[in-house]
Image (cartoon, rainbow, N blue to C red):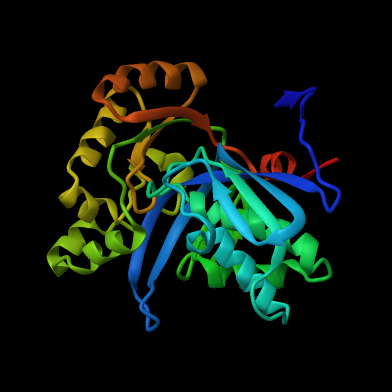
Amino acid sequence: MFRNGRWAVKLDRSGFQIRLRAFAKINLGLHILGLRPDRFHEVRTILQTIELHDTLLLSVRRGPFIVRSRAQAMPQDRDNLIWTAGVALWRAIGRAGIPEGVAVRVTKRIPAAAGLGGASSDAAAALVLFRKLWAPRTGIRFLREVAASVGSDVPFFFDGGTVLATGRGERTRQLAPLERQWIVLALPEFGVKTPQAYRWWDGLSDSKRRRYLRPLPQRWRSRLGLLSNDLQGPVVEQYPAIAEMTERLRVVGAHGAAMSGSGSAVFGLFATQAEAVVARRRIRKLGWRTWVTRTISRSDCVRLAAPVRID
């Protein structure tokens, strides 16, 4: 239960608990440069943290390493990216086997298979906590290397705010904060797995690729309405409803709208919260799940995502 701004929890005598937020992201444009020798795709994308978040509760206690959630769509234990991240860090610091004595429970709000980075954000947040427990003397560079081995966009979530990501997405450069944008997120009943979206891209003819390819403009801040996602074309060929929702968001007043990442979530950008609320009301009749949220800066991420020990 919630009490006086703190989670009221019962601790056993063997340990303590730490709570941490894991924020979602949207892609303010995604450009595919080609296929790399390692079979990943070379990309150039602008990533932006948004306020929608999961909450991780890490408990230090006797027992096996577990990762759990009440969300049916979230993989448990070994099938979860948090588990993968924990084992990767454990072995990177020279320890054998599987870590013990830690349980992670996730309150899921970020939908899966939506292009919002939920699993990667959870993994990054968990790595921050695991490092405090197992490897407090290691630096952020070491942690970023571990994160990159877990997932291409996991390192981004150590930065937050507005970031240019290159390589396969693991190389990041902080950009000046974007002026606050209010966002309407729309999610259909279907999800899109990232590997599948890239396979659809790989299967395009050269002429279709040229049609869909749109490099990120240099003055992208003043051209948010023109930013595009190279993956949106091939995904729309499979799911035309994504294009319909993108256009609908523009019709109801968004000054920019696109699919995020590999989909299936679509977002619209608005200048004010009031405009976003009205727009959400106008698209809800289409039957998609919808949220109103906002962009958050790197300083917001540092403040809002700080781990809280619960005594």
